[in-house]
Image (cartoon, rainbow, N blue to C red; front, side, top):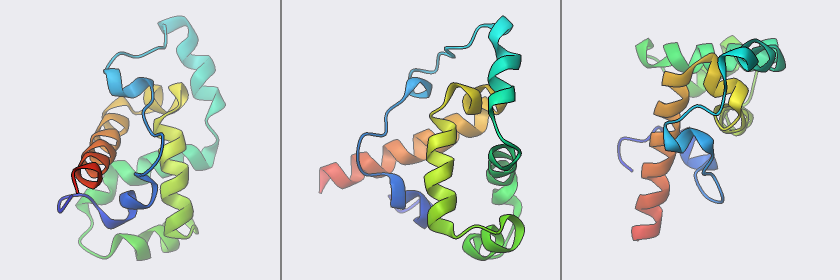
Length: 113
């Protein structure tokens, strides 16, 4: 839990498991374009930000508000929804899996207490 970004803990509790946990994409290649069209521009911006955020040295909460215009709580709630959706995991499977691993570690740590 020490390695998990503070914001991810906001949505770690509760039923969080989704298809991305299995490592198998539920998307066939013919359906990929349809799923990608289901992501809004803001959804793609959230995933793009999450993919690049590890490079920034400043506070992530401040960057979320400055770059995306979202409160960090809203950002992490939306991020969870996006990475658990077939469209989100098709758009950026590596980021989706990384975020889900962080969530899983946080939940496991909370359950162990």
